Image (cartoon, rainbow, N blue to C red; front, side, top):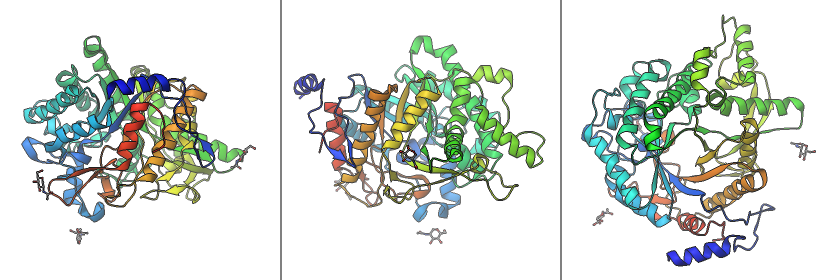
Length: 499
Ligand SMILES: *[C@@H]1O[C@H](CO)[C@@H](O)[C@H](O)[C@H]1NC(C)=O
Ligand SMILES: *[C@@H]1O[C@H](CO)[C@@H](O)[C@H](O)[C@H]1NC(C)=O
Ligand SMILES: *[C@@H]1O[C@H](CO)[C@@H](O)[C@H](O)[C@H]1NC(C)=O
């Protein structure tokens, strides 16, 4: 099998075997992905592990939300058992092995390791779980790509304000240091935070995701400031204490849609650019350049002033903080799913506050775009190429790992998932185009997700997996979907073959 693959790779080195296929007029890119390009899949602790209070694990904000506010989640679903990966991790790794992935992106549950959030008491049984998982991965030749924080604030720290308390920078730094120390000999690729946008805008602004804290126009900016400083703290700890020995990298994962102007009017073109700087730049710009982009600072400062605030609702970084932040990214993780059309529009109420109010733009999706399982899941493959190109030009060609991309439907046990295959194929083709034709530095692709799992407030209604999970069975039986075999073939041939 190995031999066959190698010789196939050789033949395929110049051109993929696929017949040129036309999908929505756009030809698939037929160039193979480079040899060192990494293909993987992703999951996150709360969404798959279960074992929510087993072996000494402490409560986090999602445990708290689902138990105190059950109707906030579709069908009152919880992640109490989820995919039961806490007990079935060996089966998960066998699936990864079958797929042939080079890496597996998963996250650590902070309260499994530190039940109270603070680093004074380490839960050895939690440590052992991750040691076992990492060993199983290494034994099977799979690289761990580890997210430290995937939406799971310890409840104890939340009660002290969570991201709104600037002591969070210390708490997170202590936690990160412990993880580097415990696992860093085997884990060389670290990601600090998953999706600061939803963490801050939805967790502390709109208040529709855990911890359901509503402070639009204020909370999300304080959260953002503490979050980027906490990232920088972890990066500096790694750089000072671990890098020379462990030789790894520390990045962050930013989610971004592509924002296309609704029309060719100058104001819409500008509004789309503002939106990109708000959604993507708010977190990336401080870590690359040490500060927010001027467009973001000006917009929020102006509106804050008109509203009678003494200073901008966007807290400034001191000069010292700017120095501390600048250049603290070894790699950028990009989560991308869909595209929006943007037009300029001021909020009618001058006192209104909020992230998107400050943008002075509105976003919508076209009904012409194929819809997946949930309203925002629209299939717009060209959007990822435009986004990658924009990041390259705006941020001086950084190294990018696609840390999430994938398709959801809402049908249980849809094993012949041709629409997911088409999504993966056309998005990968546009990524290949971005690398090949636009020179974007993309080093890997991580499909979301290995298996159907707990999709936050949408519960188990949205299916992102290339493996089906039977949530009605105590066994949480996993069954391969057609897309798993498609992805396996792409990985083996490094080509976007037909199924
Ligand atoms: C969800 O929980 C609420 C309150 O506990 C209950 O009234 C409702 O019937 C539950 N819904 C479902 C779908 O179980
Ligand atoms: C904007 O102008 C370009 C070039 O003329 C055209 O291709 C494109 O369709 C226009 N976009 C919209 C939304 O009208
Ligand atoms: C659960 O798994 C066990 C062992 O693989 C099997 O014997 C049993 O029939 C399964 N039960 C269900 C409900 O699928």
